[in-house]
Image (cartoon, rainbow, N blue to C red; front, side, top):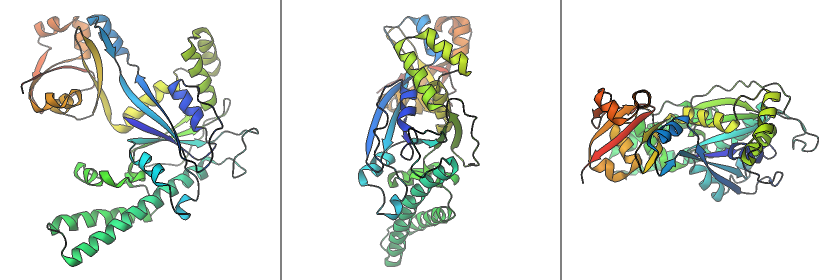
Length: 362
């Protein structure tokens, strides 16, 4: 999973990036409109992996991972002045979803470019840029489809008409100033749209960046595939850096003082999994205990393909036990003896926390 940390200049993207990655990237380097990227790969800390590692004592323990990339280069008015650069669009299009940082904090040292702080206004401004970008893409495709149908250029006229109807629906949605993720698109439609780089279609976490002592901000922003949360970015960055330095005493002191019960990274990972509809399953053994990420509702053969494409191609069956059963019984032999180690076929729906061993033959 690769999520982009986006936002207008001075929203606090680098601060949030440091908080999420326990990094120390310099602040205040952003120049509005100039494309730049920071990238970090973060382990998804999961207590279940730690327990399984203690049980099996493997040579290697591997957590699932999320890539966070902080993206500079977005600004107001881009859609009215030639649009976003190709380099910026290519990067945004390759992301699975967005963490949209919206400024709600006041700062005399970093005054807002518009002269005042207004989270709802800034959220709408960047949304508008994405809507304008997508509208241009959709209108071009509609024009091409209509011309092609008039000339009889499509071998499968019915499929072209079906695609045209979809793009006309998207055009109507965008014209109503609603993001494309507001539409209930099926898997076939999403697959068809994959190559178009539609930005408002991507799942989004709106992260309202508030000050250390500031009350949480509520926004009227209700869209599908969208989550809204508050984050004290500067404080969370300082806590993350204490954690990275191993200064547990100071970390616990400050967390207690500000009422922080978990670090922002752990919270955002949970939100990210919920937003993207993801879950974890595990493989265990003497060589490695490992967490894998798969979509909720995925089949056993799809999970096998996440491990390696060969496992999906030669899939025979999956030996499966739930994490809770395996831990409660004390191991795989005990789970097998108790009838909790099941033999599942290709169509089995993987559950969060399943421990899976794939049997295959090529």
